[in-house]
Length: 377
Ligand code: SF4
Image (tube, helix red, strand yellow):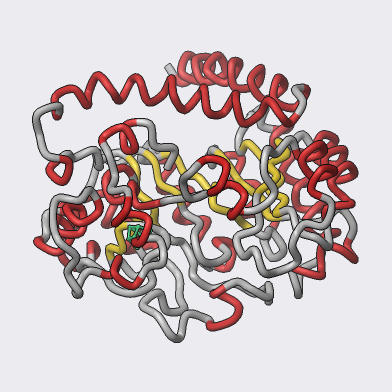
């Protein structure tokens, strides 16, 4: 029985392997198109389900249930200059400084068997969670797919944990590496060491070979800035050698180390724009608007506070570990926040979105059904 299941698992991994090879060989300018097309095809599947809600008002649409985000750790050891985690240690907001406890994670999974996918990374470094191995093993036993797609720095992690990432098939790990040499890398990832990160990636690749697994899919996230743009060609080459997808990303803070040679960056990174402002001008929308997470993949803080989205630093909607997930999702304030986000209700001061800079965008362009159906969050 187990042998048959193992064979099936291997067969399932074949198209993923082909897809990854295709991505690695394809010029970067086509990556965006490919990922967008994939998301659209995935969205079509949701669309049929979603037709049931055609007559419903947006705020009543319930697409949650399978996918949630739980921050495994809000703590980070690096001192990246413009990151809220390193600059404030979350002393000035509701995130706080801590990690997801295994006993609470276990209880949460036991109480919510419908949950099948969990994103573990948000504000901190998941590998600083001393109970991360137990979390990874238990999720695997329960058939829950884990992701670390928001990002890890991979500077401090035990070999044993790296082995469990492969054995328990953490699906995706997006590793933040903003430079191809240590000198450049350390300018932003202060306190980190590129050689350690590369060593850890190589160990993962050894385990992937040992266990004949395509997981975790490794992605090299390169935030393109003025001080690192010249290393794009070398970083791409290294990513290929390390069997990683190369993922260049726009700088979140335009005032910090802005891109100097836009044409070079566009050519090397396959990007159509080099800053958030340019993106907004060109596409007439903000670069990233995570508000749909309220419907698609609600964010939960490491201590159980329901935040709704990954940007919320200002207020919670109850505690899912103490009150239960469903109770919090159907709470009056959470439902009201959804109404505000899709323009069905007036702005109300006790909803955290009112303190968010992105809410201005929502006031002008409230969320529409298609935003949720084709969401990539
Ligand atoms: S307005 Fe801000 S806080 Fe509210 S859902 Fe959108 S991103 Fe999150």
